[in-house]
Image 1 (cartoon, rainbow, N blue to C red):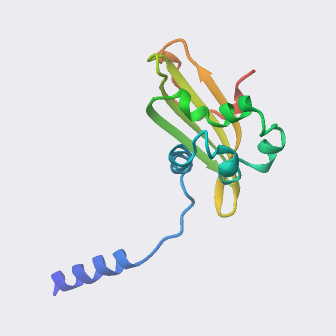
Image 2 (cartoon, rainbow, N blue to C red; image 1 turned 120 degrees about the vertical axis):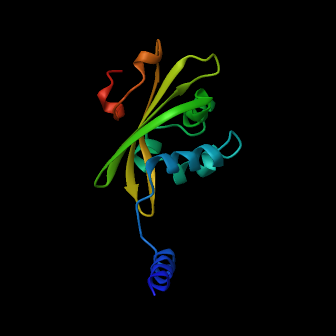
Length: 143
């Protein structure tokens, strides 16, 4: 009888769905996998906020390169995120192509049904000791 109840509980648990916010890092991975030089302008509204895009000249090759900031990091090490209502921040520690430490600090805003990047900070660190152990929003860095 206990075995039967255990099986029923497991089956019911597996059949139920839970609506959760998509974690920010998963959203970043979606951006990383689905954008390229050939499609970044067309796909940018899927990954970047209107607020960010309105500040940019999307016909500029330099801006296209900035939107593809993902290319600076070739080996992510870890990530930390926090969500505060309809906004959140994500910090990703990793290494660039020259094996130098680099950090991405991203601010996201919730725009149904997605999280969109609203601010970007790419920090080229001196050494691994500069890796962040806490989430930092781009506004925490003095540019």
